[in-house]
Structure formats: structure tokens, C-alpha cells
Length: 79
Image (tube, rainbow, N blue to C red):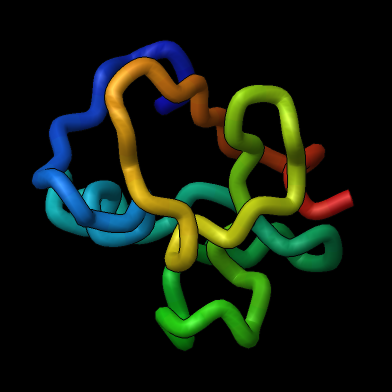
């Protein structure tokens, strides 16, 4: 995640792995820069967006973690 390895359990989503590692917010809102991370956990709200292997707008609560994936966070993820 963002150039750092992220431990995960097989079958775990990116959001679950992030929360398990202590990271509860990984992007901010465009207006107000309020922190966002996992909210609904079922892919409805779009608060947990990340870029996975160069594809932005991926919901971390729906993407299963796997070895070798490149995951980045930040303001460009929600565009």
C-alpha cells in the first residue's frame, strides 16, 4: 500500500487488511479534506476508494488482497 507492504490473511479484502494494520482512513474528501476509509463495507458508499494495479476508483471493501498487487491511495483515486 503506497509503496509499503501490507500484511493480509488469504481471502481478506484490502479494507479489512488496512483496518487490521491500524489504518482506518486512507483518503480525504475533496471539500473539507475530511478523512475517509471503510464505511458501509459492502460496496455501496464509495468511501474506501483506492487505485489497484493502476486502475482507480476501486472499492477496497470489495477487492480481495493478493500478493504482488500495487495499491495506492489519495485524492486521485476518487476521480
